[in-house]
Length: 258
Image (cartoon, rainbow, N blue to C red; front, side, top):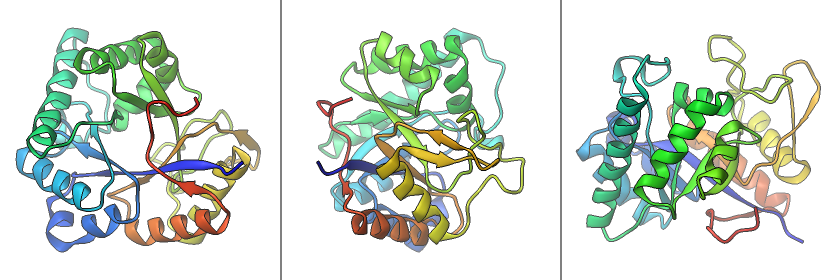
């Protein structure tokens, strides 16, 4: 049986990438777009522009909400009252949903960003808050989170379809968490190494952690960060390697086997 996997990218975060064509180049290589929706990055103009590019590439569109903290790009945990954070997440998702609806398309999924993503992966209370926020907007949305994480458990408890995610250009710790970006070796810059990691995840269901151990990873979608240097080059190498390995690349579907 052929292996099928989604290839997603975090986008709509940098106006300069929209202006110089690099965002469009990246979106032509993936099957799902996670669009920043005004929390850590993005505004109405960038959301609309990114939705248009995604439609041109005929790919799935999802919301990428985070802590409302553009100063730190959503990569620092904010001390927020749960109700305030919930209201922010709902407002972010709805903002993108409205722009997408105006363009004639519905959101397919939600993937939290940065520090919120990482905290929800390990903290059950944060995971529940994120999952319940998504369900409050649309229980038909797929919730994307780190493979094997608390967020996926919370999503299932909230009645959502969930999709485990792995990263092609991030290194992993032995416990299956992502290597903290404060470490110089947290990112994979070599496209061939990223491509090899993608194939290993898709075909074998494992990643090689920073200590050399093999870590199981059950992923339905693979991520490329749009703000990573050379993101489109990495995406091209990853896509080619997956296709050469016989992997079918397709967007997430709600009725996919979980």
